[in-house]
Length: 564
Image (cartoon, rainbow, N blue to C red; front, side, top):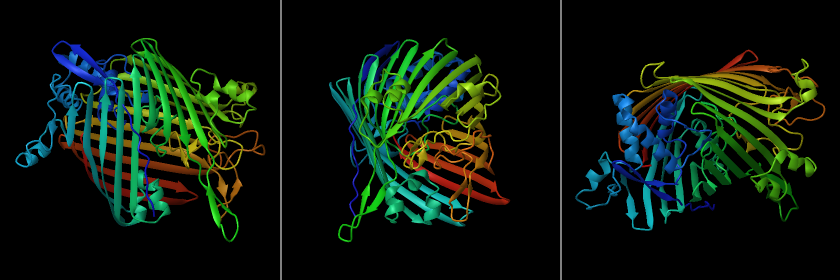
C-alpha cells in the first residue's frame, strides 16, 4: 500500500505596527478556526469592548486578530481580572509581549541542560524558530492522545496521532503553512469512528487498517487591502453563533483558491473549491477488471459584507455547485452574478443566494439571522402556498447574551434553524449537484425537511479553564424506505435522494417518517502550561423513530500539544 499526501506551501505578510508602548510584528498568516481567541473576540464584541468585529468568514489573518487584541488591550481597564489574564495569554501566543525582541524559546536552546525547563516553561516556545531581516519561520510539534468510551458499543478506543507544523513568512508579503499528522487507533473501530477525523478517513475505512492521517497547508499573499490564498484549511462561513449554514466543520477539508478585499466598512470574500464525489467502479473485462473513476465537482462562493454602523451589519452571499466538466471561467470570476451566468450556459448548475444580518441591540445582547434560497417560486411565495416544493429555503435566527446582562465571563446562545424539504438536493444522478463534499453536507449536518433548536452556555472559569454546555433538539421528516433501504416515498428528507419532477407539488415541513433527536455535550478544556491542553467531554445522543429509541453515552478525554 502506498500512502501519500499533498503538501502545500503558504506564505505570509508582516506589517510593523507601533502603538504606544508596544511594537508588534503583525502577520497575514491565518489563525486556525479552532483557536481559543475567537470565542474571546466574539464575547468582547457583544460586551461592547471590541468594535467592528466580523466573523462571518473565518479564519481571520493574524494581523486582524492581533489588531483586535490591541484594541481590547487599550480598553483593558474595563475588563475583569479573568479577562485581563486571558488577554495576556492570547498576546503571549501571538508574540505580542516580546516588544519586537523575538523572546520566544527554542526547546533545544542550551541542550541538554535546559531541555526539560524549555519544554515545561509557561511561555511562548517552539521546537525551532528562526528570524532574520527578511524571513521568519517556526517548526512546532502537534500531538494528540484521545481515549473514548461508548455505551452504545459498550467498548472503548484510543486514538494517538503525532505530526508537525512548518510555517513562516518572507519579506512581508509571502507566507506559508504546512501541517501533517499520522494517527493510529487501538481498540474498537466503531467507537473510533465517533471521531470525525476517523469517520472521514479513507485510509481507515477503505484499507481496513487502524491508521488515519491528515494534512493542511496554504500559500498566502497580501498587499494592502488585498489577499490571495491557495490551500487547504478549515473555512467557516455564515453568521450563525452555533451553526454555520454556508460552510461548517461538517465536511472533510477541500482545496480552494480564496480572494478577499477589506476596505473601511466593506468586505468582499471569494472562494472557489475543488470538491470530491464518491468514486465509481466500472468493469471493463476479465484482464483489466474494475476501473475506478471520479468526476470533477466544484463550489464557488462569494460574499459582500457591509458594516453599516458599529452595531449593525449586512451581507449577501452567492453560492454555486457545478460538476462533470472542466473549470468554468465564469465561476472563477469573483465579480460576476453567477445565477445569470449559469442560465446563459443552459442552466446546468445548482445555485443559491443567502442574505444575513446582525445587530448588537445593546452591550450584552446581539441578534443574528440569515436565510438561504435554493429555489424560489415567486408566484407561490405570498399566496398562502409557501409549502410549494419549488420554494426551498433554509433559515436561522439566534441571540447571544453576555456581560453586562449576564455574570462576567458567561455567555448564552439560543438559535433556531429550519431547512425546508428538498433544499441542497438537485435533479440528477448521485451527488453531482448536491451541496456536499464526499458525502457530507458543506453546511451543518442537518438534513433537509428538519428544524433544530440549539443552545450553548459557556463559562470562562479562569484564564486557563473553559467550560461549555451544548444542547440541541432536532425534528426531521425522513423519507420512507423498505427493508433493503430502497426509497419508497420521497418527502424531501435527504440530500442524497435527489429531487425530480415526480415530487408532489406541496411539500410540508416535517412530513414523512418523523425522527426526534436530542444531543447534549458537556466539555471542559484546560491549558496546563503554554501549549499543553487537557480536555474532557461527555456526550448524550438519543434518536427516536418508528417507536424505537437509539441512545449513546460517550465519554472522552484528551491530551493535546499545540504551540499555535
